[in-house]
Image 1: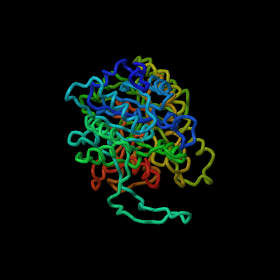
Image 2: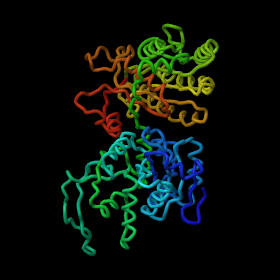
Image 3: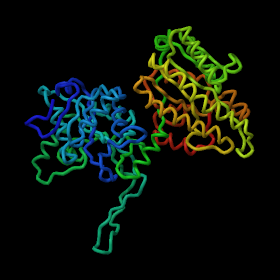
Image 4: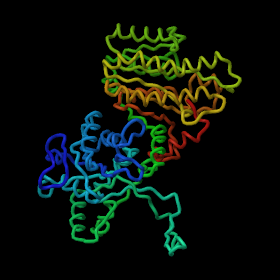
Length: 514
């Protein structure tokens, strides 16, 4: 539907009718009406590229993946509706129901969304609406799920985190500048985030009352409910430090770095029947499959009906640093099974020692095995994985976030694996190939034992646990992700660690390596 004569909003719908918006229960509304002036841009900040994609594309992807969200409406800055439609079409976001031109203010944009969502609703019919800043691209699915769950009990929900800073109240005295007039109790202060979630009927009623107030102005939607529907309690859901808003120029650089560090929780473990259904008849090629994680992946996949080619120096004479060996191994698997669904590379070398004291042969080996081999495997595997729309799975270590003394070659090549994963995931998206990277904490493998010797029992992950998570990743729809595999800490509640804390811990913990 094009812009109608009865509304100033320019509305573009995919599919072609607003009626489709009312068939589902939970709608995410992306507020993307900002112009980008504060970050010094000539285009809206939501179209700025961070980590290879427009900010709004990252945000859309989060809601597209969220199982509790039924459809998405985008409220876009005037004049840029077609730009967003192109992004949506290219990425294949199936949940996007409408792209609507936003208003001159935040409140006007919200009113336009409310009007569109209310069209066609029967008397007494309601729905859940989550309003989210499009320039908060690092939102977690956990926060979305908590908001939707809270709407089962409450009519209005906000998202907030404790204030780490002391907040002061000031007053300006002429040319003398500002002076403190109050220091509120920090324990009661929270920093508001989005989504802000409501029953549609509630937020619509609040805006109807606000419309009769000549002094009405608002920068967020919970404040409208708080002021005009004071009897409606606004429940607060715990937010996430990661859920930052790209507003100032420095935010662009911070967000870009956080995307590099961002890790994804391991997908839920499937049951045995699911493994059999998804793996039966599939072909897996595992480089580095002689022992450790690679051997365990091969054994687990084979036990569930997959055809597995486990390749390694000591078992099949396959040297990953030799391009001919890689190409021959893939060609053989394809010739014998007619397909290659997943290619996994767990091969690596870890040599401890100061770089200045490392000989040329050891340096070359580290580069050949840890970096050039995955590059060659990726190049050779592309044509096979494109046929099956399969997945390439690589491995990194927590040292990718910060180089470690005495194994600089290892940590730097592991950083390269993350960049390679993220780059190929974008490059191969059009081919339907998924690319992910597993980041296990310290794991009991022969390679680690050779490097560090015996370590305290229980201090390491088992290679079997990493292998099972690896299969979960292969069977998921994830792409471009770094998936953390961590031991469970009995002193921490489930879901207690935020994504920001995990990334920060990866940066600061100098002793955690796979």
